[in-house]
Length: 218
Image 1 (tube, rainbow, N blue to C red):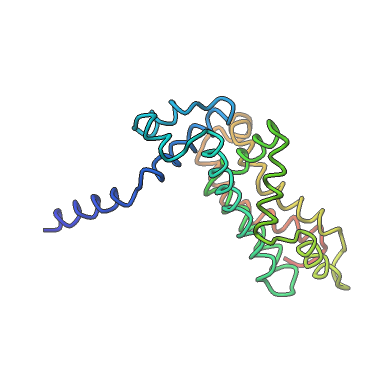
Image 2 (tube, rainbow, N blue to C red):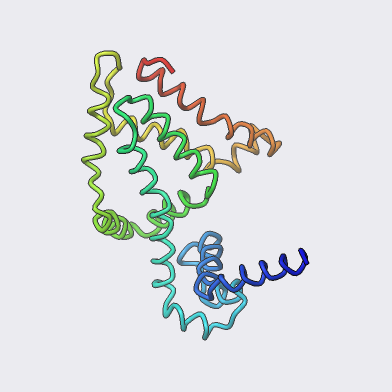
């Protein structure tokens, strides 16, 4: 009986994966491997296990398919970061810790997202306008975020730095280790398990470093 239930559950799960979902997952893998320029619709169809005609039925062009994936990847990152900044209390320590934990978790869950976005903007600088358009659509006001953090930084007991510098420091310290993982593992952590332990402790180490910069107690 349990086996029958288990089988039915698997069948239902497979039915929930629509052709569009299968295509998007396959395209994501191909775009990450090849980038936009190197990816081919036939390769995406092969990865999805379907013919090219069916692929074109759901997505008429590579550009349309790429734009949807690019948007999804950006939406995976930004809303979480924005919510972190405005949801936290006025204590800058809570904001710093939450930002660090958010970026560390994001980069460990989907390490390819940040590299994918940076590489595609590097190859096609015009995509920065696409990013700006998405930010405008969401109603995001970067200056409001900077002002919110800057206000929290302006207390008597904190070494004041520019809020933008704080944001860049946090992003760099959290994201770079995963982007540089192949090189880091080659020279510093040949054992993957040791690298994973390092990443598990990373948020704590970054938090202590930021507290030292701000001259506040961790």
